[in-house]
Length: 298
Image (tube, rainbow, N blue to C red; front, side, top):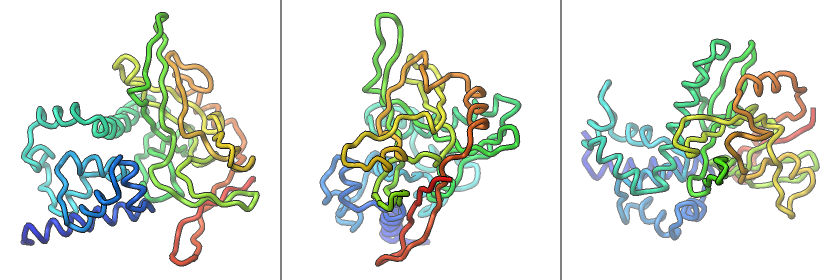
């Protein structure tokens, strides 16, 4: 059995590997965490150790599954709950989540995926095919579903709770972040390239927005990929803007176009639309092998 020091060294290496798989530098991860770069450098080198809250926040910033990282180091007995494995009570976990907004947001995101799975399974015409590997950009999307013999990719996002407001008339408004967890290189049809976390036209089929923060009720609003607003950054080329989806998007409840509460109407609209954008993944060698997404008109 490995010593405590050996196990922690393996834990450090798993965190480094998780960051590198997302193509994040220490500085970029530190920026997401709201910490100096030295914070990441010190825990990756073993100069300081992470507590459980910091570990979960790092996983959220990277976009890594904390269960996978822990199990890769220590393993867990079949049937053993995470509470038993970590020797912590549900009340203690609830207190940690309530006390740490970034952790609460990360956990809510995973719960939203589960709730989306339950919603998909409530329709007899939909088969939830599960979640693809987060690192496989050829299958970008939180979940894959089969509807009318066609496999569709669904991206699940959640509201930023601090943006939620309710008007005197009862209408809810809020914003959500609509981007990828990792930075990648995108080559566009005008021969420009861009390092970005923004999602692309055609990279998934349907967006499902978790609107739980609108009155603490589990409900979703849905939209087609092609109907989402485009990025507006002035320094992007016209081609880049037309192929990049805005990072911050506003939404209301009751939903207004391009969003709808009726999932099946959105899925039918997706099936009726022509395929306009093709995303190809190529492996190119620069100094090291990196993933490049290429956007081409069909």
